Image (cartoon, rainbow, N blue to C red; front, side):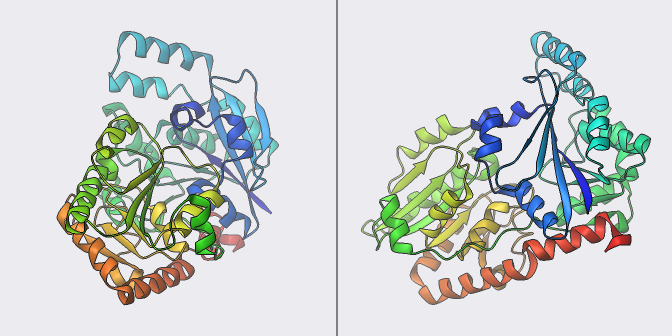
Length: 412
């Protein structure tokens, strides 16, 4: 069995997870779902073992544990002392100076400890979460020294922060063994920017598990939603501009004005940096419910989606819209914007299970939502197409086979 080290981007574990209230213990015992664990399960299905590696300023020595749901080994390595000092100086004396922040990030990877983990776990390849990240650059160097192939995925980081990073990337990205980029617009950008051959890029999507069918009335009863209520769902990080939540709120306001007597509900699930502003906005929007927290357990997430009749996403930008995949796996028809990362999931519109509207157009979004609401036959057709699309192109087995062919072609 081959082993892949999955190296997560960003300087520290806490830089991302603190924002959504996830501690190391919660990560270990409760967190499931999302692109990370979908990757692990897809790889496991083709006999590839995954070792997850983070850095953290909150541990003083390397910590190893097993993720309870996937069984994957997780290493948390101490952030280098020099990075801790450098970042403190930059943030205290030079706040918002992107070039200095980027420079300090190049000190964030504990390369000596990471090399020890790679040897101890007998890793055969390195897979980085993002290529537009200093950790990828550091891993490329380490992989060269250890003679390990280095791959990277695209999960939404499509821009460099500074001239320093741009210069480094022009050296490192062409030397990657392979880049996994499911977004067409991002593939075009990378090829244009870095002049790399088609053979270096693989358009492998994130996988999604098949979701067990649930009793809809029981699920709704457990959530306090009446059987006859028409429910439109959204879930993700609460980032108003990126996720288009202002547009979705405006569209729903239009729907409620047009259909004042309709028994309907817009269900939001998730939290994020804009939650205070978003909460204030929702005060004036009727027929909404907001589960204001990051849902750790995919079983709980599935219950919210199973209670819905329709799923919508109004994003202006996505890396690759995993949220849509999760909704499609639950058999929901989709109404979505034509933004990068969204259109990659349902490029053919109704044939792939969804209606597409222009990003930023609240009136068009409201019209598409009402169209599905008013046409049960259309909704049923979209639902069936969504399930077929997931099974054909995004199942763990299909994605796992493609990942194996990329990572270990000689052994596939």
